[in-house]
Length: 158
Image (cartoon, rainbow, N blue to C red; front, side, top):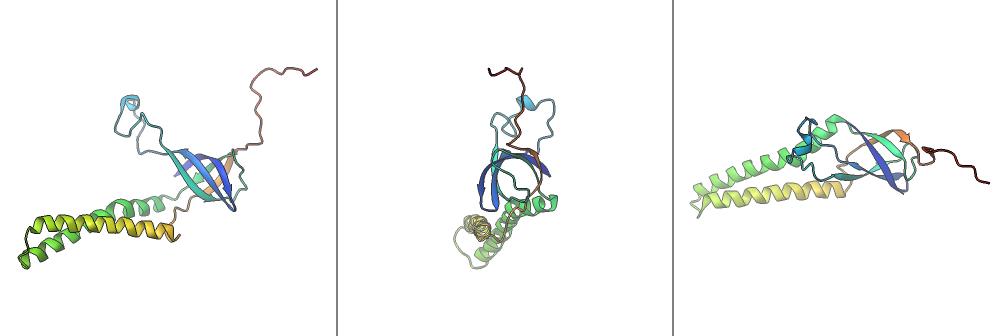
């Protein structure tokens, strides 16, 4: 997936880029009235990327994020917590029924919720430690901040 973004800050050999968040919307004819994707709100995302093209603040750059990486991140954020909820909940309920504990269904639900929270805490810890990053890379500088585009008539300065 490629996305055009703006460089907003330089931090050593990294740049902070900002752009409109891409949606899964197919941009159909009903897009202007669609509230499914929150079309009335402009979604902006920020990301730190290695500055391989020596981009400067104000430059427009094209980023590439491998599709396999998007699938991996989607699995970690959605499928893994859901699977943890189901398996931990089922295991807790089976144990609660076997041990004749009080309210096995409520205990299973609470254990499932705790498993989801633990998954998100693990993901957050991995991201904070730098072991789970979104490896977007710069492909090209589309528009440099140094280029001045003259759109009006020229006025002589006497």
